[in-house]
Image (cartoon, rainbow, N blue to C red):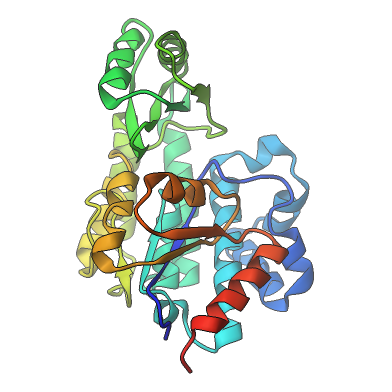
Length: 321
């Protein structure tokens, strides 16, 4: 067990990049094994696309989800192998952002690797099937929620757009149809947003456009065995810790049409006396958000071999055997 309370956070779509996980794959047999498992389950060469692209393939929802999942779980397994202990015994809390919820639930002992990978594959398929009119996501930074909601009126006549994630006090993700997103981005730039741009996400996740995908995923979840998470697991939709398996299933289905309350989750960390967050997976998006939230939590990303080694050294200093 850790002498300090640690949260492991798992990124979602938009964090992927060509080459992610390659140095870890070369160094650790457990990483190679994990990528092979996910590839065998999905019948896709996940490592090849993660390491070599092309970008237009890696950025497709199914490849993004499975690649990010494989990368995240690989890092978790490095930790577990080093300490001869499951991640849920090391982390006081585990949480994922969007599709990162599946990585988190697997590492919390709630979903098997096979079920998590198959659910992610199905989820991506349902989302792509549902997106009939063409859509995606955009990020707006530097405006208040009131200003962003005002910007949404610019979508009128262009299609649907809505706030889908509240990631920081002044950072919002918008989901919607392409023309509507372009109109909202233009208005946000006029209002002085520090950043307003499209994300490399190919579907409008977490909004009403995904209603049919939610129905399909909810049906799929009925046949999946979900165990109670073995450590604190935060729901994206309620920002609360969930323990009941049916509540977990409902949360995963609700996630299709409801936004991610990431700011609310981060602001819960002090209530649980969490002192350190490690982001397991590609990029450092969540690390930056936790730092900007200023909730008294030291956050670090671990997507490269160098950073993973630093994390292991830091964890070693706080591990009680």
